[in-house]
Length: 129
Image (tube, rainbow, N blue to C red):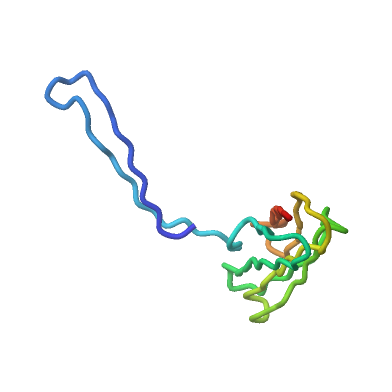
């Protein structure tokens, strides 16, 4: 999302212009921004590790979020905080303290935006001793 600039090299059989570069600049708009797209819970055994993900509405219409699936019960928890009504949310993820472990899963949220009806946030964890 945002300003993007991409280039590509073109190779030809023209001896005078055997190679040239073309570029494209664009602004990519998204109805809902999720930054970062993955929450990483990396730390030491016994510690509570917390990571946050910010969700921002890209439309003038207020955004609503409804949890529909979380597959890390017993390994991680989440909490959604509305920072700016209908515009900005922060999702806090924390590990469940315990033995050394690695895990991955996700939280899926239903939205009221037709352009993006479901948001899925990946969660990865690695707790070492």
